[in-house]
Length: 267
Image 1: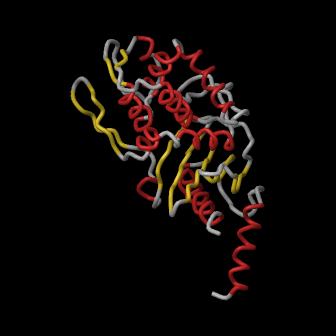
Image 2: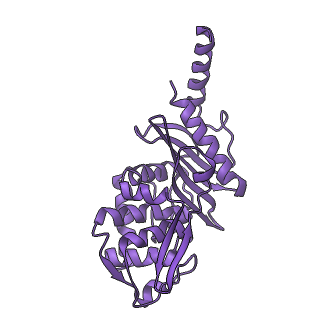
Image 3: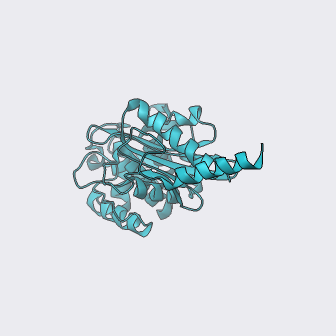
């Protein structure tokens, strides 16, 4: 390829990266971002600072806090309070005990809201106190436009984030080796008292997108479809976030953003 052709390609990429209005890359999501996972540089965004509902992508921050607290192989016991939450659920029963490590797999692969509530209560004493810790930790990571009221992402008008904030949270989360391992796992045998139950990862990009390493899907009616994804190729890592998109868009938008991110960091 001639030098003039290379220069044309590079110039086109630079123009695309500078355009954060949505003109260069069309996605269905109301809020979206592509970020360099290593440097934290924003490569492209659409309404990156708009407050939107995160649904179960909330669990990324929940998992991060639990891993940072440690003692993951210590067993904790389910209380009646932990079970009083809407699906998706692993149908925990009062008196059952699980390691925090196993619970993290249930949190991410099953997206179990009862698991999120158990981990929050165990960590902070109550869901409300844990939510305060979530908001503080997010702010420490630079995610200052976010507020959390629960550990699972079930709808609450005061529970919101932005595509930019969620990318910052995800970037910190996948620096944790265990979290990185969990969100990249296609399946896990849940240690139910009645015998192992196979859990399947809801993130289709693990199979559809080469290099995908996670990380979390989400859905509620107010939030619509949500996906935080990350991929690693040739020593480059891209994080993509789509908030409030449609059912095909959850995958199509994310693939566009990841492809764009790798193209933008190629030179």
